[in-house]
Length: 222
Image 1 (cartoon, helix red, strand yellow):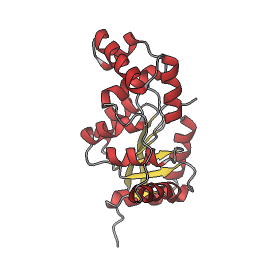
Image 2 (cartoon, rainbow, N blue to C red):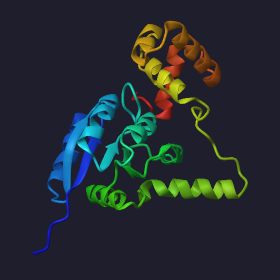
Image 3 (cartoon, rainbow, N blue to C red):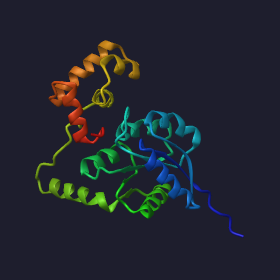
Image 4 (cartoon, rainbow, N blue to C red):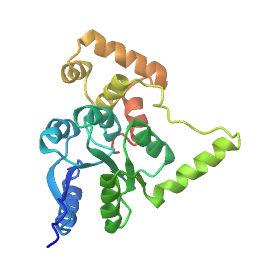
């Protein structure tokens, strides 16, 4: 009698509860998967995932508090054996490049067929990278532009440090300097300094301009 392979342990991170419910229902219908947990908050997920021994983390990009892109390096430290599959409606090459460069092993569009989610999780669990055909075409176009010598557009956030990106997202969702300092465990003076640096680097003169930029870059929802 052949022994069945252990199920792939999956943790879901998406701030939309309906999306998480749909993903859980789909994965539960497949005997090869086990959803060991889910969260709508990336910070809560970072605290929970190591103890749950997730094999694959399915991670959204646009979330309040901490974006999926900024959660990747933190997850790499707290759960280094877990594979990271980005699942997002953002299909622009800049998002794919940032995710893969930060340490994600896969990237899947939310417009993909549900069966592709299963294929992507299985690929990552085997140790193979996976990029959805819906987003890989953008990478190919970008590569062709770079090899042709044409300039490749970069996101305005590319020059920010990890801490500046965290501050940027908190400010973009309406947090005050005091709230930013409290959430990140820094002094009020440090939070103010980060804000000044952000506004200078991003050429934004107000919190409203920071918020508009965050929406355009896909870090917060409109």
